Image 1 (cartoon, each protein chain N blue to C red):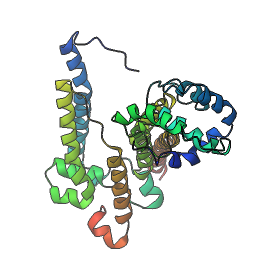
Image 2: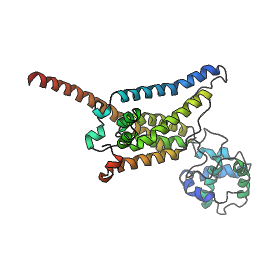
Image 3: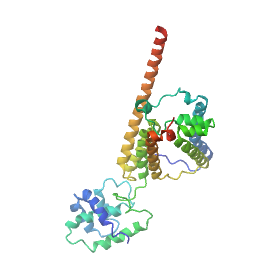
Image 4: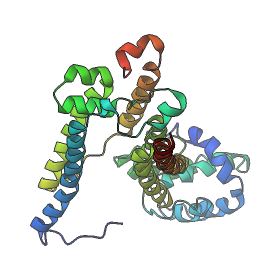
Length: 198
Length: 144
């Protein structure tokens, strides 16, 4: 039982999504003390999650409502705590660190993609040849956004920032290329003019 | 969305196709290096960097073409004077490319590169870019 501290970190998180659901949440948990089914009635509050059934997210996600429900359950139900401690132990045995993900509801194995997208997007501005890392930023960023849609990542903001930076860098590169071509044409033209008339 | 390729249906054909990407990249880079070795960027003739043209600042890649030319022609000191970071990074890129070829040849998959390496690289890149524009450091880090 390494979970006693977990309800506290998730309480502030759970308050936003859990605010509207104390009415819908209570019957779901009160009716079925059985370990696994409660995850299903508890889920509708998190529309982002259904893509990955059977993965750790239910563990913290199902706990968050309890923090918010505290005001409605005047006694914080002590019998319910062991009942929910039991279904969590199988998740505890899994190799994931489900409680360790900051601000998340579980394990996001593809958060790397969003970080890489942002790194590449920023690099395309640090290095002044933008498209070289801007195009990879767009590719990796769209992969990261797909991972977010699939519930495998939760850093869609980083991914979006990387994609935008990548596009801006590519656009700037195109503008610079056009500028060089124009300068080249004008330069050559003026040189010819110079040569002809002077 | 990589479709589930038939496992070991034609491993040789797949290996050959997997080798296409690293060898193509290698050929492209080798060709560009050859051009750089033959046409000296110290003499000009390559497009001017837009950042340098607009602001006069040297970005972290400034001097990279000249450093590549110097490396390709065996002038290590000259390359270091143009862009020391590139002199340090270029061999690592060659090694990484070699690992890529080996992976493609053996059909193994890459271990995921931890994202903190990207963040650290970015910090190093930005720090180098700032430092080489500090007037007192220009003789050591800047392209001169």
